[in-house]
Image 1: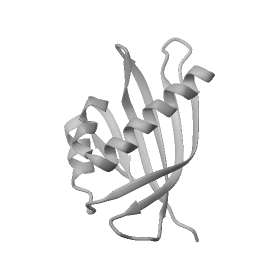
Image 2: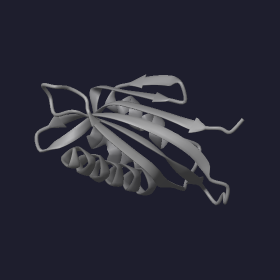
Image 3: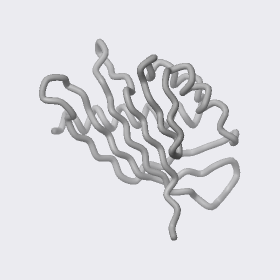
Image 4: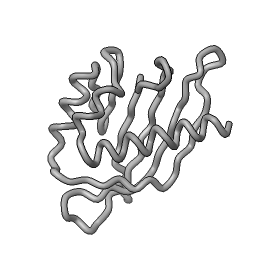
Length: 125
């Protein structure tokens, strides 16, 4: 399990630092069969996913990961499910938004790509 947790930590560090600094650079993480569900809206294909992420209506964002859980997702393929919760600071807002995000990572050579990505803002009620 230590290796799975290390993979999850390395992936999320890269994903969120890249998202916060230069969203188009996330394109290497998605494939044509990749699927993103963003706030309930499904988007398929690497190009469409990056188009969505780049078009989000904020110029500045900072992710702060609070929890990170990982599990192997297949007995035959070294794939990983990663579940993240945290805070988002958008533009110059001082009020953080809570979010949760789940990734299904598939091995590809010496790294991983995102097969599935589910993102939700978590609103208190």
